[in-house]
Image (cartoon, rainbow, N blue to C red):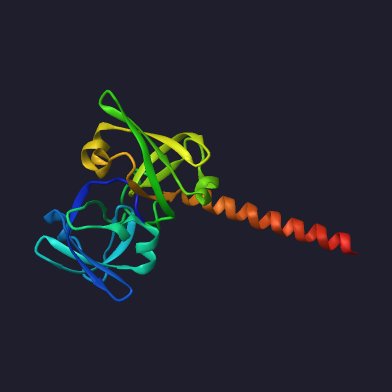
Length: 212
């Protein structure tokens, strides 16, 4: 589990196309690599949870499966790409952002960005199947970054990006039209699924009652 608070960035230095996926070799700050345990530690890459397979020097390697490559922007990853990195939260850690699972729901797109003094206003769009999970002033993870969404219009919404986030994440250099990983709030998904199943049960009960 993650929080969406990004403290580190890494860079893809090698891509190894293998059966069923791709292995990514990522260079990261030494204090990040030192905390990784091979075959055990999870790490979020632009919001997508991966298991560290091995590490050497200031680099570590992960395997990204075909499912992950299809559902995230890592499917179009190239050498030199910068990634937001987040280590999992510990039981004693602070949940500074919101609960982020590292399970990307879909790929969105940056529509526009406008500077607002030291901060910025970004507008995104998400796939149609994610629209139902957008809630005014709720949290959302964009490339693994915990942000608050507002001004929802269909599958479009805005976020205000503070100077700290612009300076320490890839959002600061993201260009209009670029794709981003989207993870909607976990509670929004559970609530929607609960209501959908309840409505289905009520409909089936009504149909059964009418058949008596």
